[in-house]
Amino acid sequence: TTPITIETAVPFESHLCDAPSRSVETSSSEILSFFRDMARMRRMEIAADSLYKSKLIRGFCHLYDGQEALAVGMEAAITRKDAIITSYRDHCTFLGRGGELVDAFSELMGRKRGCSNGKGGSMHFYKKDACFYGGHGIVGAQIPLGCGLAFAQKYSKEEFVTFTLYGDGAANQGQFPAYFKRGDYVPGLKVDGMDALAVKQACKFAKEHALKNGPIVSLFNAFIKF
Amino acid sequence: MWGILRRSAVDGGGFSASSLRRTRFSLVSARSYAAGSKEMTVRDALNSAIDEEMSADPKVFVMGEEVGQYQGAYKITKGLLEKYGPERVYDTPITEAGFTGIGVGAAYAGLKPVVEFMTFNFSMQAIDHIINSAAKSNYMSAGQINVPIAFRGPNGAAAGVGAQHSQCYAAWYASVPGLKVLAPYSAEDARGLLKAAIRDPDPVVFLENELLYGESFPISEEALDSSFCLPIGKAKIEREGKDVTITTFSKMVGFALKAAEKLAEEGIGAEVINLRSIRPLDRATINASVRKTSRLVTVEEGFPQHGVCAEICASVVEESFSYLDAPVARIAGADVPMPYAANLERLALPQVEDIVRAAKRACYRSK
Image (cartoon, rainbow over all chains, first blue to last red; front, side, top):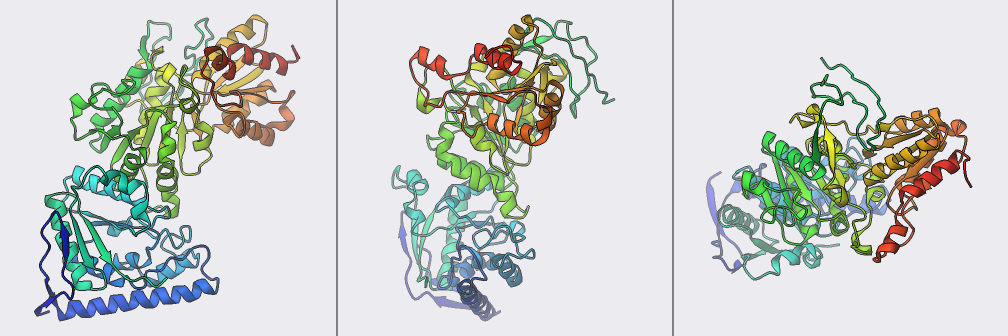
């Protein structure tokens, strides 16, 4: 737990705002926990892939392996009272919010022990007690929903934020560009999504920015395998 | 204290309420029906309902196009911006998908949005959020997420607004598990059902009718009380009769009552049921009535195929087949996009004479 400072490998790029510093405060126990959580997420997704290929998981199965640094880095920067909403690629986000492996696998395999009692499936994991609002199957739907969550936080004067996660598919969906096309005024950040420490720094920065100034869009570059 | 007052009095007034039903939370009025009851337009009924619910619960807020500064496209939200301020009454841009999504997200987080669609035709822009984000979430999350949102606005045909602005969405939304769908007729319906919709912990689609907004109805003291609320899932028998049952909702209730008057002149006693709730449908009341009269005419303004009437027919055939003395008749809008010309528009919608003719046919009084 002695604090260590590490420089991110890749600098942040910013648009309409100042970039955060490349020096990230961390500790050896935090880095070890990153490793543990990311390794668990990776193993879960690879196992899910095998189960899906054996037809023990039905329907759709969208995997997050390759993006583990994002889920883990984000959790290190925020609290369980900040809200997260994401797409159907939600298994690791669920784990990051404190979900249990057995609840995730049970859900994937349609069991009552599943986090949605087997009624949701791969795309509909939720954990309301940790402010994780799913798990959405329609590309881009989570974006206005996430705005609504943030709206509720502002309405209730809570000092928490909402992280709305989406991929490059949703970036084209009407619901997202429609709001932002009215002019170039939303600031942005470009982050190396393979670096959990950079993600942590960016999310910490984004939360502070959102609480003070309003919405910010962050682009995390990551490799996904499938 | 919660006694049931049940009286049925058929009077010549046509559409006036003739029997009091027990309602939860309401004070029972022992006044005589005829003792100078107040009148209220549907518009004022809706406005007062939203106002009272906003006053009672700070989590309730209103959003939609023109609901604030313009006082509401149809003035339903008149005065609310002035009274509650811009933190609770939001004028949205013209992007139903966007603001409906925001409303549903806010409901996920525990707020109680009242989302106005300028007409339900525009709800098609947002139907993914109504169905996939709102209606299904409680089930998909195994009860973790509930969505206390109300979607309201005018539904069905107006006057001369053409095909893209005249569709009835009752059957579309009522087919979805996870949604409740309400359709008020009178001012009392409007107040009681909208309050129930706003208080409900689940998504409710509240289908109003533009042409009814300006109509005045008598309203009882209990309905004017701010705690008044009607139960969801209960139909109202507007007029009792023993010869034929007519079920309908919204504006067609008025037409059915007029048809009942005409039928009474010919000695046919029509029982008119105001559905009030399309989902859940009050199958018990409908079937009990059909078992009494043995004949059913179902009426709706919307397209005939896969409509509300079709569901009622199916329900009655499933549950009361041996009681039927005649085939069930469906009177619905014509199977055509709504025409613009006034004469064609009239032909495309059910009229009082269509209901009368169908009822007489069911009673074997005409071909």
